[in-house]
Image 1 (cartoon, rainbow, N blue to C red):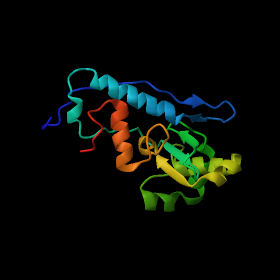
Image 2: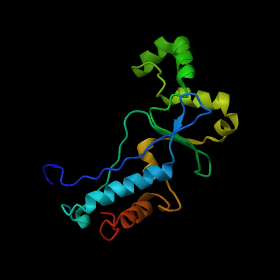
Image 3: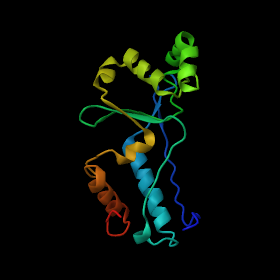
Length: 173
């Protein structure tokens, strides 16, 4: 609405998977994240309170420090949300070595949920995967990543996403 009132809502649970071989390790499957977003969007659209042709944008967010690591071909190497604690020891070491400088530069100390510890964990425990990393994206950006089922990216991807969700004619306005 012009006043920004909520007119429809969709909700879909999704979860991360425990990695028994990785202490504190949790990861998620990006396609499951995408499916949850699609289901929640469709739920909101089917509530009847919204005219799909009038939707100007769809947004997603996540709490804290979820991230997705990709290789040169755009394949997922790792995807994990903030509960993934695999980098706890590595971030503790960063804090011990560089805490004061880190805080001066960033305004916070390195904690388990932050990317540097997870990257260091991968470097130490899965060096082959670490060597393949070419891109790090925040978890909410995962929905914009080019994907065979979603389109090639940019305006073309936005059009395909709108068509996939059943939002109007797929035109990007």
